[in-house]
Amino acid sequence: MPDKEIYSTRLRAGLKTYFVDVQETKSGEPYLKLSESTQSGKRFEHSHIMVDKDHAEDLLEAMADAVRRLMAHAFKKKSFTMGDDKAYSVEVIREKHPHAYARWTAEDDTRLEQLYCEGKKNKELAVIFGRDPGAIASRIKKLELKEKYGK
Image (cartoon, rainbow, N blue to C red; front, side, top):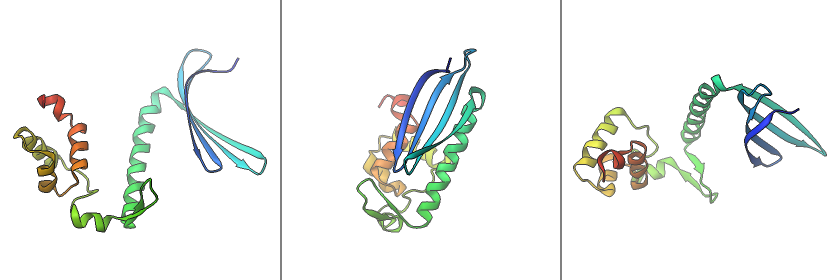
């Protein structure tokens, strides 16, 4: 009897397909299964990684850190593509928003919270922080300031 499937999603990327599944062993223990299927001519090659539930959160943190580093490395090369396949230069974006793509510091978060409480609007905050208004809105959401202060 195969393991019970709890959740499954897939991502197609050219000749590869990635699967992220949550399954349950015969004894009822859940685990994460990461799979890759690659088309090679008429054949498919498969590889799998099984992650115990006790290690899944650590794997997620490690992967999130790796993705942040990957993106930082891509930004160091000074160009990246958006969904519409237009190339954008970080340097060009930073002409308008000097701190675009810079990491938020604890001091930035504290100051943002204080200014938000004072009633500053996103456009004002964008100028103060040298960032796009969308970045300000995202940070306010991440810090849950609307929920915290009922605004």
